[in-house]
Image (cartoon, rainbow, N blue to C red; front, side, top):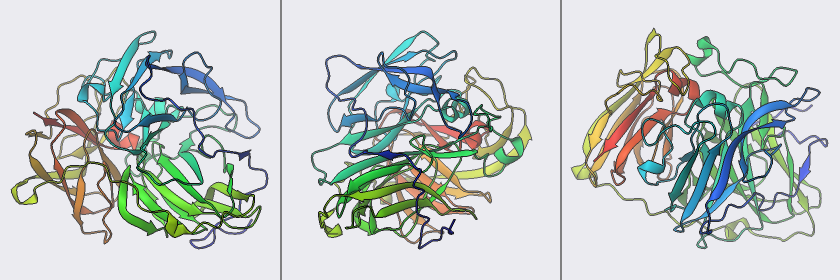
Length: 465
């Protein structure tokens, strides 16, 4: 099999499953009379070639059986009310966190911080109006390494009529599975790896398939909505066709930027436009170039007569209404991301890994324990702040902030700064300035989205009053 390189990506195997995923996804439309019925339940999926089906945890809509593939794509509309009733059909507590959405604190889905646990057989009603358009995702914030690792990660698409029209839309949910050859789950982490970059999965999938293939109009413009929902893996995306980045973490770039490669950490999202080849049957490969053995994530195959679209037809997406901080008056707050002296973590109803390896401002916190922990800082509603964040470790950390969006003002490691974001993929020894307006009251988690790091201390919260 030919090598996958930075410029020329490995062509997909003809054995990959074809799918007409143009605008795919079960739409959970906002504004309905009754809330969407979103059930956490067990299901079965064929994830290992030649192995037995794997018993997974996943999301299902209403009375439908748990899907054998990726959880349903939830489609909402910017500025329109959305409601969902979570019913827990698992055998342990759970919640729903609406990752990246700037919604009221009571809807954020963090147990012991914004809501009570949803116990087996119980339900919880979520209701909010998404203020921003873009690509988001949903997952539990309880026993996260197991529940997310066993399948409970789904993509959210918040639509707006202000966006340009594309010839196709394909949603990719990228994640690994820690499975043995028989399809059964193996230990979700190794302490030695949790104290480093994290423990990787053994089966790599997009939409719960290995290197799936999708059909798209020849010569057309395809909008890829990509969410990295893995608990550990950092991707370096590459595409062997003309492509441009439209948005990162749900926020539009001022103008589309040509894609060379793009690093994407757990929790992050990217909207990318791809210009399909003109010839019938020609293939575009989306690959992960990170590490010593690059591999194919998914392929797109051109179908039909060429639409002969010009990539320049894909104009910028509409900007979300993110407040601009007043840097001159902003209070500065240091945030140091560090390792910590190992000691045993306390027990928690939402699961503990039993170790602490990491800390923020020298305080390690497992992140879902009922034990009281002081906030990193108490912010005043409506005021501007600059966080001087420093990664004092030799590992990358995708640091995610709930409920708010910040601007990356500067960095000693990057020359091109992204648009407003809820996650910064902090490189080893990176120091950056993050500015925001504290415009959403409540307690908001700040944590590494490599879940082993979150669950072993790299977690805290901000309080806005």
